[in-house]
Length: 425
Ligand code: ZN
Image 1 (cartoon, helix red, strand yellow):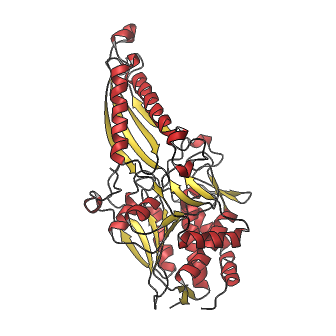
Image 2 (cartoon, rainbow, N blue to C red):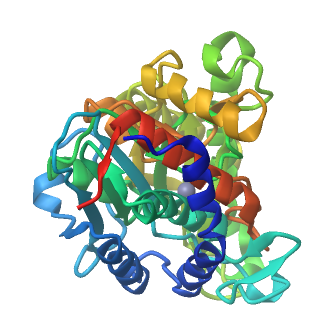
Image 3 (cartoon, protein in one colour):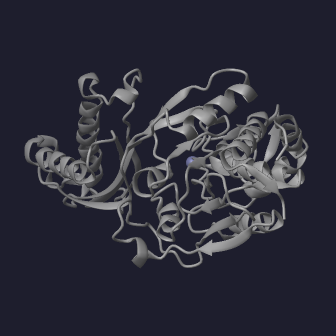
């Protein structure tokens, strides 16, 4: 096909207003855990308009439970499906591609802290504000616009392309795992996570644990007779934090994060406990998140956490009389590394440089992404390359619309090169 790069760039640019509207509609469709359906319907409709074969891929727990990469879910999967738009070329000859993004967003936090309501998107100074605008609805828009731009030129990729909008990236990754279990693999996968147009070359492992701490209730007139479970839970978390700081030590650091000041983070994300202001709380539940490096096995990380809890209970006088139980719930996500020399990575780098006018930077991510499923378990080389966003998981999250369009341009040009082009049916 003779469709040249300039025509593709122009075709993407022509979709800018439409892209902005799509993004606003997606942000308005609040897709927190358990309520992803409305946003998934928007994606399914859009994939249909693009001429793709729209498939629903349910998360069948029985089909994924024993697969590597499975994480124990927080809620069940009734009516919470992935949506996949399948492009089947008339004469397949190029390399196939998965473009994947997650539809789920994290809770917005206290709405009163937001300048504008989190699910009422507004544009200021070239940025769209709203929960999920950056993480990662702009990514979903970018890859869809890339495909749409090719269609507007009456061409299509000359290899199978799968546009995936998956659920539950933010706590398990089981949405992406279900797509893998349904046999969606390809010669490469790109996820436009909001990493400021850097090329992801590694990501940490992430594990969630729930620790239920029991104390001993008593009247506050004699707090010494009781064991305060909230105090104990908090104290226990300082021990777990210390464990993660040990893994962060420069001599133990994974080479991909050698220059990073603090790659592995511990987070006490949720605490719940107590039942009366004048009663020493008998029980507290804490949900914690720990990061760890690729190469550390999941069972070793779990054992290290359990050991740290046992040792703290046995040796810390501040924990005398307290008991604790650890459960694994949510992310049990291995770390992953990508080969920057892989043809997919070098092509993406080359096209980024042409479009952005500067060399691509490499990113060793301190968070997990669904890229691990393709890369580790799906025989599909994967990376993240997506727009510049600010305050993801925070207050007043925003994404650069110019960056979103630039990512769409890069992805359209990438598809043209990687898959080749044919005349659209
Ligand atoms: Zn994300």
